[in-house]
Length: 564
Ligand SMILES: [Zn+2]
Image (cartoon, rainbow, N blue to C red; front, side):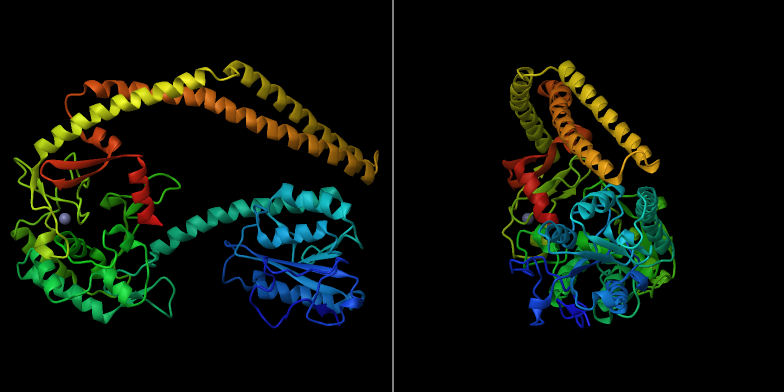
């Protein structure tokens, strides 16, 4: 019977990268079996489950991979005295090699601790052609390690596979990884169309089903709070009044309700006092206009502002993916309509979002957006005091007119400072050692050199296939060429970085200056300009405001606090 370095009964990750699995000097691996003196042959079982592998596809599960490798080892008498060490990467893509289990395996290969590697199939090692090729053709050959891929019936000792054959298998694996990413995107859209609930959090009034995935069910306790909001609205009460009633009755806000139920989230970081929340008109209105309470699923109502960022923009309603009767309704369509009719009669409508300071003017004390009233001569006021005395907010009102004046003056001053700053950067770049032309010439000649080197590999492969050179000569040549390519690639990368600073850097600064210069003489604010420059305006008092500029550390920190 083979000996196992770990307890196979345990399905948890057996290999832990932080754990010292090998500390004797003979390169053997310590097992929990005491007869380690006899161990002379170590098999590495490499198991990998990608985050994109379908969770329902049992055939790729770690348990299944382990069972396949174990059965194979047990069936081979030559392995009866071998020790087995598992290297596991669970939920990690094979398109790169930054995997803990994989890296530990590579380290152990370097240290001579591994004699044979067994995988369920080649794609477990990786889905990137170059990485797999590098492992199979360089590492394992150099260290004289046997490699067994059960799926491909490949055993490097018994039937050495030709380079070409391996290249084909690798190529199709790489292809598969790309294909899978596409599939994963479209499966999300399919789920949306089926009305599955894909948000992380259940909507207030619902909870996530424990038996069905992507399904929400009514949470009776908070569903009553939702029903109360709608019935108060139907009675003719406006959202601020409804909020005051909810506060007076001690009804928890969605954030508090989640907290009471032991769900910790990032929402509370946004508040000045993370432990305190209250209902306000805006919050109530957000619930009252949510058609999901009638059982309709809504997806794709927001989109990511910029690829890779978390901030979202609202999509227009005709872009939403809606599906009626997707989940149980808390409010009937008739109740929903009745509440909205009453609100309309009460002249309640969505707040004006068309003004230049939309969502920018915040109370310095409670951090809520100030309410804007009186469209003819608009002014801003913090309404928090109407709901709670938890915060000591300034009682002042500030007119839009005076805000515009203050912001405009500050923009002019700010622009002048920034112009000086950019001019200094420009001067520094102009003193840079190499010119753009020189850099471009260097990059082009290095690229040509790499191209020639790559062509020479192809020539050597052809020579190997037609048996003009031996495998040994091929590998030696390939190693030298690959080394040179790597060096040259690193040089090219550095040169490109320099070029980017010299060209784009200069262009970017000049573009910035072109944008900044007119600001000094600007006469009137517009929405575009405010959005571009002003992150927020904090109102401390009638004559005391604080402008947080876009991109300043305070703004970045605030965003960070909100999302982390
Ligand atoms: Zn306030």
